[in-house]
Image (tube, rainbow, N blue to C red; front, top):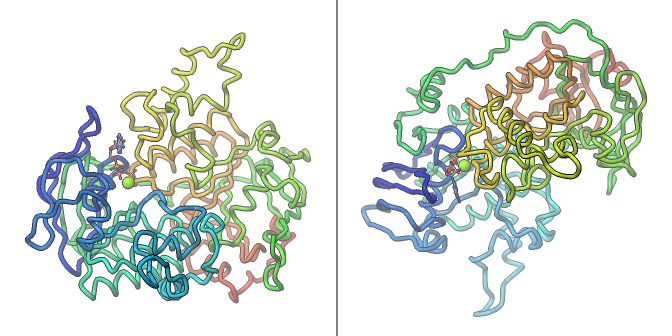
Length: 514
Ligand SMILES: Nc1ncnc2c1ncn2[C@@H]1O[C@H](COP(=O)(O)OP(=O)(O)OP(=O)(O)O)[C@@H](O)[C@H]1O
Ligand SMILES: [Mg+2]
């Protein structure tokens, strides 16, 4: 790609970017939220046609007037925001636009299902194929999205944060597939905020900052500090595990007794989605929930937030008082707040401005005699923008036009304005860049220091171990270990999380209290 420039209205988001991708290369593309990574790759895959500059494949200039053109040129892209058709079944999604045909008009579903199944098996996906994709969990949908790109037999494969919702095992399998493709000569662009992934996978790293090409370096020579400086433009203080003071036993803020959740289709192996979960989180404590995808971590947060009123059971106490949470409204009234991993579905009104999104939960306080006081709404939004370092043109910019990471920060801001006592965080930094991550980590710490109780779910083990004071590990809905900081290690968490793994010596479910 030569001298690529692109503007959206008045804002210039790419400035004469050169990008070179070689056959057989795994090329990581990095940069802060809003740096222009997705935009550059949308241009490469024919999704954005209106830009300046030139694209060459081989030595041939190509003009991509649609994603279909890109497919024909051997370019496939896996998008950051999933682009599947929810009502269509798995195989139909995978072969959408590239259907296998019996004859001129008839789709050959059987061979589609077979071919889809083969590709998905290499990705470790074993779910049913004749099921609308809306019924799959986010990680599974991501695998379907990946399979869709793989069946097109692309020579250039672009992956925009493809692993953000995958489990550790799924990610490992995907890496194997990527390495195999690269060995076969496929060129791979890999967009990710996860340094560990890039170090493990990439041959080459290119960094963008504010729409400019900052540098391209061999991955072996790129150390973490240097990469961060290239991305952020300055040194940032990354948060280190040592920063953490040991928390002294504080008064219990949240207590959970015998929490359970019915399984919609129980099996002998998994009779319940959540079973006999007990824990106490002190004021000022960050309590981590560890486990593989499907272990029941998200469900625990959902129960606490009143999202499973009919099917869940157990007791919830806040500051020692039993409370009823049969709806999110009740949860909020009891001082609970939830940040979810799916900002599109339950976090944000994408068409509304940042200020309105942030103010929404506390509208009543900002209203006088039924009229929103714009000054207060603005002041509130402004202070959050500053506090969380949200990059936006102004506070009225529509939330949907923010970069992914900045959208996530708005979700966090939205919860903070309700001044919760217990903060439930489900993958709070999914898709967030290193700089912003450090800010969010610091914020989580600050909130804990102010006496909030925080329950954290994160599939990034380094993050979970960095932030948590203790970690309760779950396996298939049941707790298997309670670790304190001295016992944290990736190996230990994985052992207690994996099916067939050990249970912590001496661990009794009911002892998961202090
Ligand atoms: N359709 C659009 N209309 C207006 N502005 C846009 C549009 N798409 C992207 N932008 C802006 O262009 C800039 C680059 O966005 P882009 O999505 O390429 O960033 P990114 O590097 O992929 O970030 P992230 O890591 O958060 O995914 C951002 O400032 C974003 O707000
Ligand atoms: Mg992006």
